[in-house]
Length: 342
Image (tube, rainbow, N blue to C red; front, top):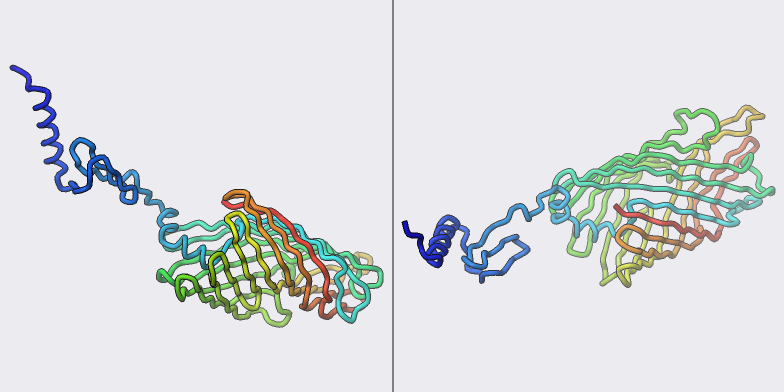
């Protein structure tokens, strides 16, 4: 049997392919590609072939596509892992004799991962060590003291609709001097529930409740705030009563910020062994005014620093003889550290 001419064989092949894939045909020009839809046109037939393997249907990709930009505008930038060193020099309590220095080391890590296209989980932990070195004129604390804060972070969030998400977080931890065995007074169970509502493309409202020992006599208090991208490269982050911060992002690698924060905890400490290690609660609350900067070397590694002063708060250091209690006076602090992103 004689073979068909080569040109006629090619023609029949094109007809067969076109007949089978006719429903997918397109009016686009041959040889072009639309990456946004992952379509490909055969350069010879003009047939449009869909490539589902080119599409990423993973939970993380869908979550990022659905909510990534909104979360970035609403939350601003913060490293996933942070290690910092802080030095506060010649701090004092108004009306009390003497002064003290604070040296603080802190490691904080949080990892958020989506569990479906509209929800995520958060796991992490933190370790904080604060060394108090008191001058000889101080009356109240029995001796220099090292206070520890260690704990876990467990939480997550979900989008109720595209412009409203709710978060919840538990922070069980130990707040102690670790002198001797731990008891129930060394443990604290902090946490919060918070809703964020989108007002428009650049403005978000926050409402929530938090429990911790920021205030000595109030364990549960409301949180109100706003996240506002009020101008190009400018971001306002408010969460009362905890912090107010303005960030300027003049270039991709650099962030500059100024703000005021209210930070505090309650620690369970023991007195000297010679008198039977009596147990006390120490309360620290410090309002800090600061200016800082963050430099990002790449998408994973950054360094940051802050300089500022304590401008208010309440300190209560208990001892065997008496209590050192009052508003902290102004003192200079310096902080620097490094951060990493997943």
